[in-house]
Image (cartoon, rainbow, N blue to C red; front, side, top):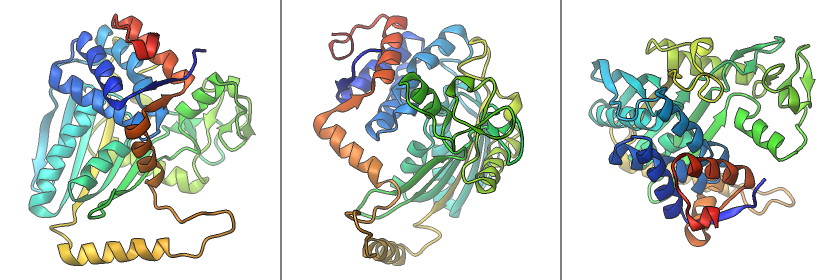
Length: 355
């Protein structure tokens, strides 16, 4: 395993953009996807950042993802749309869906966008944060291959379907929650295994339907546990419906694995977006006053011993952003290993990575 490396956000984004362009992606979508992955690392979510780059490049090179694909609206109304991603990169599809949703929400107040047949979407939180910075409360959902057990089941029935929620806070960073509906994202299990770390007994369900700490069994013989039991199971099912059933996309067991399946085949992931314009649905001045009051009341709560202050969802990520902008991004060894793989695939040799 290589050592940790430090890169600036600009270095990381340039490296990723070059990799995408080498794989045939035009300049604008290459920059868009690169910025999305680098931003995810800047926010400290390394399981869903540039660690994914090598896998995406392999899919592009093999034809599973179409480098120049343009998402298309198949059906739409004043406050909704269904978009076919045409096997585009997931970041291309999601930002296109957001553009459509933001435009509709600005006109009618609320919008739903269903995106089907796209690539792996990465971190759902970056899309929710983008919507919040453009004045919309937002919910982003996605689906994936089966990896999460239902309570009491001995096999996976849903993906570790993500849900991200964001709230605009005028003159401040958005409130942001980005979680898997599994007890833990599958990427974190792989990362823990790679690092030789012990698997908590709340992460995995063994072949007998009971918890296991044997990471070597994942994913062939185990499933992820649902977050908070029946609660996470219910949220995961909701994500499946909003992301795949409503827009007519592939349901979890029909989705391809962008990691394990034939790289020449599309993965056909799906995503759902709900946007509420705080400027249209709410009175802007009242919204500003009430959201600031809510935030202030939460922050004013008496803290427990050992707690410095009450944090809002997303504050840890924004702290990572500030640190990365000042000091660079510290990339864990498992991320560096994947970046070096991407470098070999795209004939790059940057000093910060390979020196």
